[in-house]
Amino acid sequence: MTLKVPCPTCDKQVQWLPENEFRPFCSKRCQLIDLGDWADENHKISQPVQKDVQISEEMLDALEDEFLQHNKFFVEPE
Image (cartoon, rainbow, N blue to C red; front, side):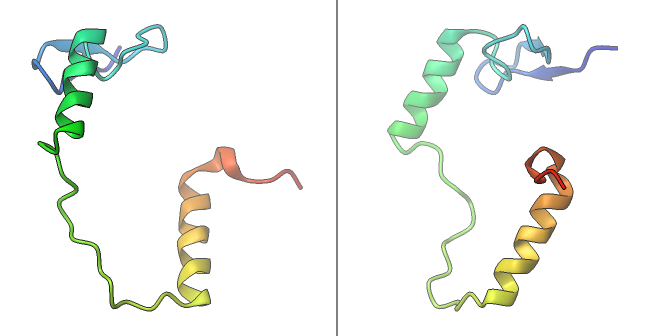
């Protein structure tokens, strides 16, 4: 069964297939509309940047380990 997702711009159902070069958008037009919305700052990252948090080496190691667990294609060959 093929996964179908709504186009973020027009809500048209889009099949999630490698052949669909514009996924998750239904067309180049919808993709460019979304890009324009980001450029016009109509879309924003919802969580504010935390400026006062000091990142330790342990925190970076934990983030890297978590990332590698969820993204197996980045694991280096043994």
